[in-house]
Image (cartoon, rainbow, N blue to C red; front, side):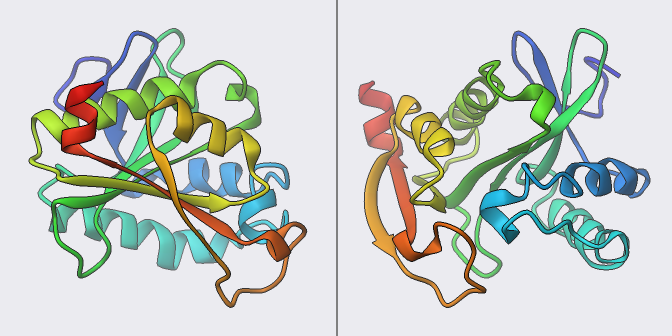
Length: 189
């Protein structure tokens, strides 16, 4: 699969590809880990039926809607091809195509290896040099210091803290944070 037409993007250690209808089990396994879901659902796993009937079809529809240039991308290690999680580079549902969200969700086995930074750097480069993106933004819980560190390493700046009305989970009393990076800021780095 490496280097095939299915590959969206490659880095030194990773390749990213579009999800397919056959990838439900990968997403179910990822979203069943309480540590992975800690800052999203308080550790509650995503029900497999939701992945199969709602989440994966939405991922596939988004990829098609954005001509496979933006969306959610499965990430694999080049060495051994293990699935490590996903990266996202996409606009809000009805938002402008030049303002996109950057994000990642990785298996615990992939934590601490620099994969979030490596994959995100490659996506930023693609966004600003090939896709005509003007603004990249990312959000996480204030208490998610690991994700915030990655955003800061990438050059994104903290621009807002907010308190959405969601089911409270540990740490939600500190709010959510938004980081941003413009094409102009990226080009000056």
